[in-house]
Amino acid sequence: MKDSHSETPVWHFRTSRQQWALWVGWLALVALFIFCWTLMTSETMWFFVLDAPAQAADLGGRMWPPRWEYLPSLWEPMWDTINIATIGTVAGVLMAIPVAFLAARNTTPSTKILRPIALFVIVTSRSINALIWALLLVAIIGPGILAGMVAIALRSIGFVGKLLYEAIEETDPLQVEAVAATGASRAQTISYGIVPQIMPAFWGISVFRWDINIRESTILGLVGAGGIGLQLQGSLNTLAWGQVSVILLLILATVVVSESISAKMRHAVI
Image 1 (cartoon, rainbow, N blue to C red):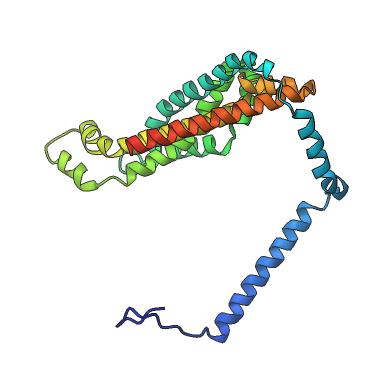
Image 2: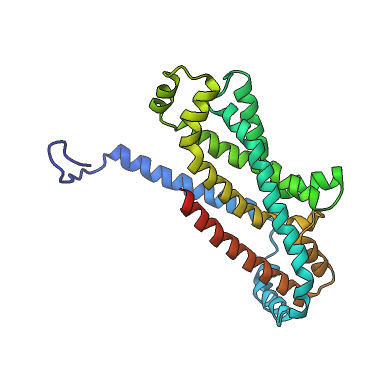
């Protein structure tokens, strides 16, 4: 606490009531932690937990050395994975743009009807994981990279839409009023007063989502949505641990490269 007449901090002792409230809060937090820990570990088989380091070491030994001769057969599935992430991101961003403008208070035509619908779309997209979207789409349209692309797109709508509509609401109203004062229509006001302000945020959000989708698309093949995950699932099913290690190393290298590209692009546009 600082004195109102000076920048020198002035410390005061807590009152008895404040001290009791602090202790009760800490005790409640500890009690909650113990309760949650007991609930989560009630069916845990601790023998397997204690044996986990030995099992991990054994699995690591089976995965080494990697089977590098399997690498050439992974280029096409990895290219499919990158395409799933890229096309899915583009589709998701295109669908998220109108949703974001409908969700923002300063651009939506209707705060009572259209805005709640747009917010519902955003919440629905964000609450369902891409893997679950892929499971549903594989059952609906069949296995393959198309299901993966659509799953990535549907998952991206909520992420991009939420961050973008928040950026729209944070735009400078003075610039918008200045454009509107020239007699511009509502569409022209949005185009010249709001869009230029959100473009850096828009590109940063889009690139960031693409980087996330690269990681998510690597596992969609586990449920039949194509890409490198399909190869990983096949190697796991056949206990080909040398192939598994090569796939994991390739995924790691791809993620590192995409992270580097994403960081450079965000630095360039923000």
